[in-house]
Image 1 (tube, protein in one colour):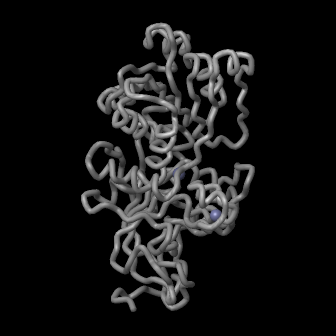
Image 2 (cartoon, protein in one colour; image 1 turned 180 degrees about the vertical axis):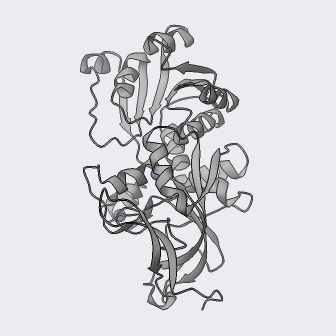
Image 3 (cartoon, protein in one colour; image 1 turned 90 degrees about the horizontal axis):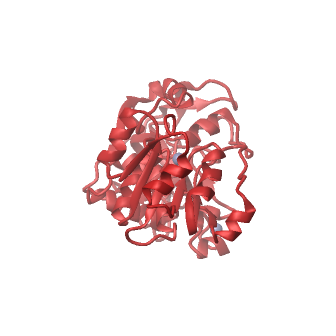
Length: 355
Ligand SMILES: [Zn+2]
Ligand SMILES: [Zn+2]
């Protein structure tokens, strides 16, 4: 059923135990005839690296990942096999598809039927509850892989599958209208630089918060209307208010890991404003003033990655050239040093590993 000869083993980056160093080693590839109905085997082209992969490897989240673990959830590959007796597959052998954080969901529970597939209690997560994309071959699920638009290069598509989908959905549900101000803390990073662009596509006026000349330049080039350097600015709340003519911003999409980013947002949002929480810090709490949250009619919402439709939409916008992911290409072998760089906050844009 498959023209492609699947090798017996593949190179993969394996986390042997939570907190232990990654090992790049040969791992057995699941045989096409062993695929269950609904499963597909992908020959990978590339994969992005996300902060979540680092959390999974370190095991510092309240929920632990499986071990041994192959991380990764921003992968693009070609389908080389589909499990026998797969009914009604929306994809076929030879299709170029993406693997996102949400590897699979039941599609039949209340959450799935309401479009919150990511909240399905039977959800499988790439590089967390099932092996992810840091390997030359990946087993995924026909219902949940995302077809990559022909106009979009695989490397440019990779990080749209997590960083792009996540920021796209957060902005989509940020309760904003054309011409509204939106504050984007961490705007020069992997998620943030995509958020700036999706905000522009939606007709919003982004205020980027980050630090350093390189990130300032990047944010302004991508369409931010103002940049606040958090290391130089003494009063971020006052500065956001000044930029927005005194009233404050309509929305903030906060992707950062520190709780201060969330607390500040309640202060610089105008009445009726919306705080979208997107980052997933393991421990930080939300210490917003209840008084001002009520008094200013502030909405505090959480937005968790995205469903299949969000992934199609985020990729479609990128395929039309309206959102471009800035990335640096590396080999799978470089993953350990990539994690080191992430822990030091030294990664501007995104890292994509090629196979
Ligand atoms: Zn991610
Ligand atoms: Zn479900």
